[in-house]
Image (tube, rainbow over the protein chains, first blue to last red):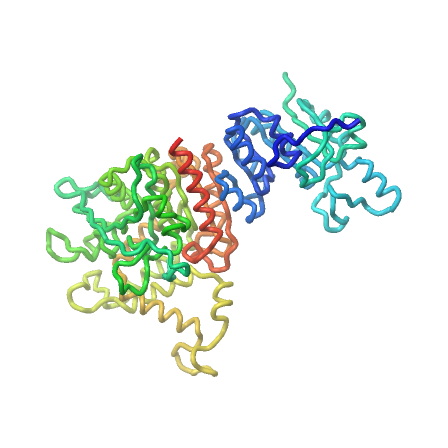
Length: 212
Length: 391
């Protein structure tokens, strides 16, 4: 069954609202690939966090700075290297992991500069993706993954199960995990509790270092 | 920086403004300069726009570049044909909104636009200083500005903003007086000149000193000024403010008022004619010695060495400001990599920093040209800073 849940806020995308609900007020937050700053702006206003963002696209960086956010234009893979250990309470990578060339390196850096990190990604094992490939024989094109094989920026194919396995292999701890059903720009959505690997469009994880 | 003074299309202006004068460092005390000399008196010409609020926390200092002056915005008289040099950015409802902020700009020490410089009269000799003027540094310029800000009764500047050599002053302010600077916007600038930048400055300076009319800098009283040398210096400078792209776009290989080559050494190409015009226009308003002194100060500027024993991280660890660093894609005088090095060091110090590289084809001068992106970046950043300072 699908648990209906109202959007965390009327003003923010459903998946971002869920991430926001995991963030403690007043904490230090780094948003990697923060886009136009929707989540950071929400966190700054609603939870008084000390925000920093990294975004590569000039126009989006400009949108962020115009909102009064502290954002650096640059490549997330390089920019994470400059911060000292434990600079942040949370490092967020929202819907970007599928575009990262060296995910393990990036996540290691994220957990060096932050105490915890939050990662969300489109779930490639959603039933529509499976059906698309099975029936049509073409590489899946869905609302969440709207690109053709030749023009997609999404170079990594990740499923919720894959990600769990990956975190386990990297010896990190999954602190929180949720699966949701929403499309990428939707303000509404549901948490998927039954058969998430099959029925969720996105997975959201909070990971941290294993206690020694 | 070049001159791009344009009337604001919207007609928004701070209106008629007045030059003001502040004199400090009067002898025998004077002001201790980086070269070890106590120097004074120092007069700074400055202008202000907008109103200082009750809390005195809405003051913004603008630092000008090589050939700029205190006249940032507005007009000196009804029949002025041109407004101040950054009128497109400073005024009611503009990027730096004079309805919200109290804006100050002073002409730098060593210049010739009203502040004490080599063309000023040395009170000891009652003759212009010429080469007896001390070689001043960016740090000395900022020291003098600090005296002005003290005089205005301002303990904290909401922001210090400037491009190019003005950006160097911004960085210098942040290190020299960290408690005074709440936020800072260094535009199209660097923590130290590259060999390329020094090289261009040196060629420009050589053009001046090689002019027989330069007369070892003592040319003020016999009516022969090194105009040719200064014009060439300006032409060289001007090339570095543009870009390959903008020159291709603006001039290409077009000829000036002719259809064929002249087969002599007149200005055939439009770009030649343009540079000659810029050079000629410049000598009417600028002093050759000031050009020598200010370019030297820019070449000497080295934030890493002066404040961090060679380390940018150590230098920036002395600052506390919230930063907005901006570079421009086609700026080859202070290329983006130099801004990135700055940002990297700021990040390593845990400073609050934003950085944007604006796509622009017009080279180093981009910061002076109408650019909506730049205006909205500055305005958004300042809104945020104002909100935080009043917390």
